[in-house]
Image 1: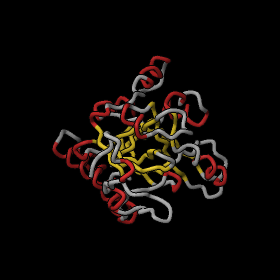
Image 2: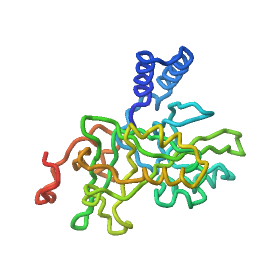
Image 3: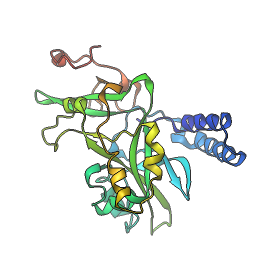
Amino acid sequence: MCYNIAGLAYRKLKEAIRGDASPEEIEELEQIYEHLKTIYHEGETQYFKSGFSFPFVTVFLEIDGRLTVDFLRWGMVPFYTKGSMEAQKIRSMTLNARGETIFERASFKGPAKYRRCIVVLDGFYEYFHYKGKKYPFFISLKDDKPITLGGLWDEWTDRDTGELHRTVSIVTTEGNELMKKIHNNPKAKGPRMPLIIPPEKHEEWIQTKFQSKEDIDRIKQMILPFDESQMEYFPVAQLIGKIGVGNTADAREAVDYEVLRDLEWVYRV
């Protein structure tokens, strides 16, 4: 699921070398790249990971006034969390943050003001419900571009171990016309989609400083459905269960479900 963070760090390093970055900035990026290259999931390629396994995801964030790249656990644990048992319970409820209420909910309002970030993925999966069954779709951007999502991050210290943890939640927004077709779960409160932040808005999303109501309005104005014409999608094999393909390359292969052939909008293999 998540974009190769070491590869991403290398790309940022090459851009810095070609650009006008200072020697100090280049040295810092070199150190980040070498560090991430050695520890990134012990070489495991991520094709599919359930959010409830709380995987690491690639994140651009600002720490102490400097932009950096790191990977954080998906499932945000607020700073005020008392212990690991409470953290386990909370993070299963904070995988996503509903964009319309991030400045209201206790878990999210601090990060929404001061700790926004960009989460980088190859794509994401969503289930389409049809005739009593559900079929997974892989959704990505055209031209193999990584998807960059609006996120919120926080850090908390485990009082039992003293260990500092940084974790992240992905912001969601109203679904666009494509997601209205795919995300049709009858139990859901309307179609939703992750908040896709285009590259030209990355710095604005991360670095807008909260000083007044106008700053909140500026952030809220970025929480919009993404242009579906820039997205591509196709049904894939079942991901979980007895016949699930799990975290394998098969999770990215288009599948021709006979029952879906009558739907004109569904991709044909």
